[in-house]
Structure formats: C-alpha cells, structure tokens
Amino acid sequence: MWPLKENIKGTLIVPMALMAVLIPFSMLIGWNLLTAILFWFLIVPAIAMYLPSKVSRYKSHLIETLSGLIIFYAFMVFMIYDHFKTDLFQIMIVSCVVNLTLVSLITWAGKKMQMQ
Image 1 (tube, rainbow, N blue to C red):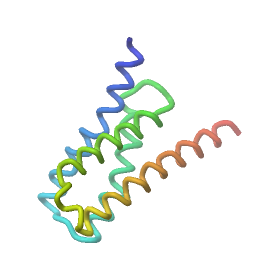
Image 2 (cartoon, rainbow, N blue to C red):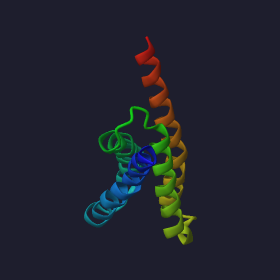
Image 3 (cartoon, one colour):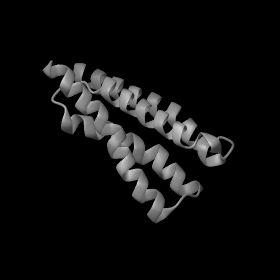
Image 4 (cartoon, one colour):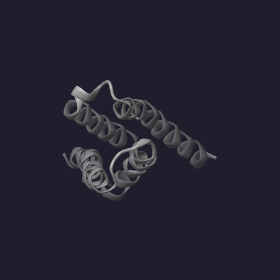
C-alpha cells in the first residue's frame, strides 16, 4: 500500500505544481512567442523532473514524471480545446511530445551514466 501512496504523491505533485506556476505566469507575464517557449519547453520539464524526486522516496521517477505530465497536458487540452487553431495551442501540443521524449531520454541517459 505504501509504495502506491508514494507513486500517487509523486505523480500528482507534477500537475498541481505546474498549475500553480502556470496561473501566476499567465496573469503576470502574459503570453507571446518567447514566454510560451520559455514556459512550455523549459519550465514545464524542469518542474516535472525535479518535484517527484523531492516528494517520493524512490530513485526511479520516470513513471511518476510521465504520468504527471500526461495528466497536466490532458487537463490543459480539456480547458482550452476551443482554441485549437491558435499558435500557442500548437506550441503546447508540440511541447507535450518534446517534453515526454526529453524526460525519457534524460532519465535513460542518467541511468546509463550511473551504470558506468
């Protein structure tokens, strides 16, 4: 039971923290091409990779990070689906694919480095 609780905690921290950062970022800074790229391609993967390691006790956080990112992006698509023709929506969708791939590659590379 406890490992499941740790995994859920590590998974849910990602979308909650990203929402907590997204709201003030959106209201205070606003959205243009530069801020969209900064948020979606730098801030989102950094938070997604950092927080599960601080909340969960396990060393491998790939599943927690990926599932947290999928929950976050699913919620974002659900919230703004009527703006699917905008450039900012397309940046968000591209960042989903890039971030899921990037997080997986960074985790894989980190495991390879630890093995050597």
